[in-house]
Length: 252
Image (cartoon, rainbow, N blue to C red):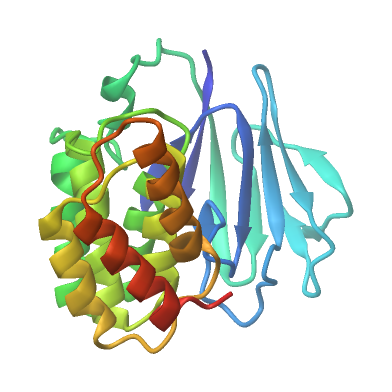
């Protein structure tokens, strides 16, 4: 099916059908750390034959080719969408056959990059963090976690392993609990049982984080209990540790 392409910050991303929010909220498809951007600022509506951008009542507006828009506007190849200080170029549709299953998750972020997505994303995040380019690292990790949220893969899938590692890296480097909340929300959606190595890395990152916003952590405690009732092997130690973390860091 057609997939709409957008150039953001020098990288090209493919958007499947559906709704994709942009804003400062951690749950958005594209998270922008920008004081001109509202918590949930704008939304891309991607359909089979066309895509639209919608301003969600933002304070500073969404601009299409320099004009502030009201409501939804249909996009075409060559359009420019500005949200806060971020300029997003519309490159039209990729009409090639989209790969199925995990191959779709392995797409690269930009043309000309031969390494497939999961194996590359960890390197991109690591390089961005070392260079002090926090926003770039956040974009890479947010792109992969958003893709994973809409596809069923096992916890040991290369994309899953790369995403988990990146989210913990970001939390550790930025001391921001929003990435931990995103990590737990992903575990909830997928029904993943957290392995001991991930849990150890998570606890290390939490040493520098006073609070985890959102309900991901508390909901994961309930997810694990349900998985155990359904017959999935969940260790008592994991249940106990997650319950302790929910009490200590849960942001409500």
